[in-house]
Image (tube, rainbow, N blue to C red):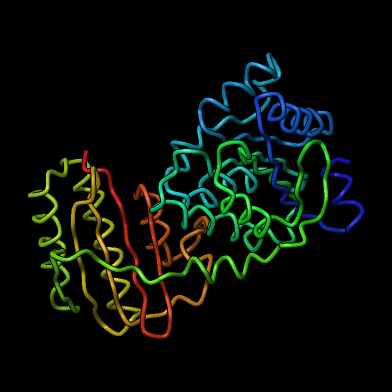
Length: 314
């Protein structure tokens, strides 16, 4: 049974299957026919996968690969929070009026424990981001190498499961439960540099962050990105979250981490994950933070919101 058949039988226009593979052959058997089926139906097709998997698919497709949009997910999706706006929606929105097919592999062996909650949040949010859209997004999972807990999350974030050439509905599908679990409090480390700010100290908090990051070995290019991240997050606090907040900054491995905490609450789970419309005025701050950062972690609740941006120091 193909994913297209499932869509027709259920009456759904958006289909989001997880493909579990255990070796290269299973990977190709699950992805390449999916690509050929789309191309035969004149459907735009994109593949966003880590470089080794992308090379495997490209070699198998041969000349046909030139008809497919190929994206290195380890670069474009390093921050899972920018995959929906800059990879998936960017491709789907460029092809209106036709069914669109995308292979998206955002979780692979090597993703860190710090990154993983953002990865599974992304997978859960795809379902809301594309609800009602005529799109199929096939998400491969390395069932041989990924932990059982990751595979269980795939069952919860994908309504359709494909394994061993067989397709079935997931009886564990519950993306809302996954989102609630991943909305975990973020605890800053002891000794983080701290600055409490309000409208009158916005320039000062930016200068403070840049000085602290510079002392911790952040390159000039990344300092420019940090300045934009700090400006967007602190301004949002002042305008939308009670007039101020607290900024914390520290170094973590080869990254500089900037955290902003305020009294606001984000009620829109897709905030910062929608592409900006050409005529849109404002509302781009969190999107910009996602696009600039190597990782974004977020917690929101009745007591406020914490947004944490990770940037490579060089």
